[in-house]
Image (cartoon, rainbow, N blue to C red; front, side):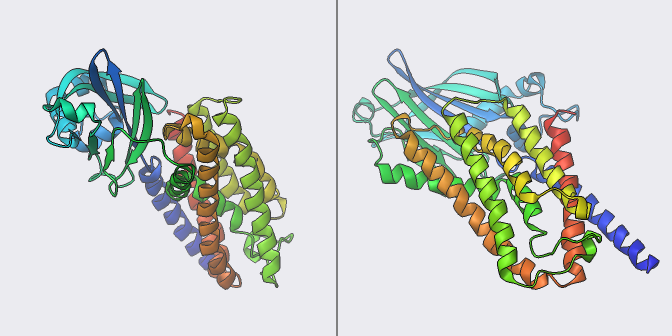
Length: 383
């Protein structure tokens, strides 16, 4: 028996180490670049901001290998970077491509680090293309390196405001559009809500940590000896309690943050989200002394709601259709959560009687998630 436990501990330790490596890879599961079209005098000016961390994936800018990209390392290759950005961004009129004339290149601070920012004057050979507003923009930076990457386009002109999300599947968008219908705005943000929860690895791991004990009956024994629940209804009620508490909590802070009532610093929110992943996973290992999981879902769901709000704000919310965008995004998040639950729960139910479920899924999975969350926490706190 001791030999069996020793082998299990070794395997779980190896799993945790592998998870820590995966944690580094998924700590930044997605990235955004920001494209803004504005008017400066008589000129149209296009500005692009892209995270230096993302640029480093292409150009290996971190020459001193300290884990950070400095402006000095970036400036040494500025001509290459400008050429790369220009070839990855195209503005076209109905009759011909427009030229992007460089105005300025700089480093600019954002909530998640420093960005490489470039400004161009949009010079179209046919003035009628601009007059008729027949301009489109195509964006292709980073898609080959990261298919989760997005270009967030915002048009901010005196007589025209609009936004669009550019992705590998939708790399082009018109620069001038009529005001979208209510259903179109709602549908767009539903899709973005689903997409965000699916690529938000930290949200998924937090949710799974809260669900993994649902098919087991709490007892005073170690968690590896908890019996399986007899009826599916018991497990379903447990899952519904967790998901409902999480939904109510993140909806409260999502709305509060979007309306400007509460706006905690992004760095603190991201760190606490990582901490929530660690605590939810470790809570599974406490057995009889563990906290009620629906209560954890509610408390930390409040924090996750601020994280959802930060993403939603990045998507350039339409001011006149704020309620539709907010409602659509929240519905999308719930649909994404439901898909995760409907995938996980049947598998957990089928495996609930096995040692594999208790030792590998519950204990091993919780240890692995705790390690991943710890890696994120260290990274996000800047250690």
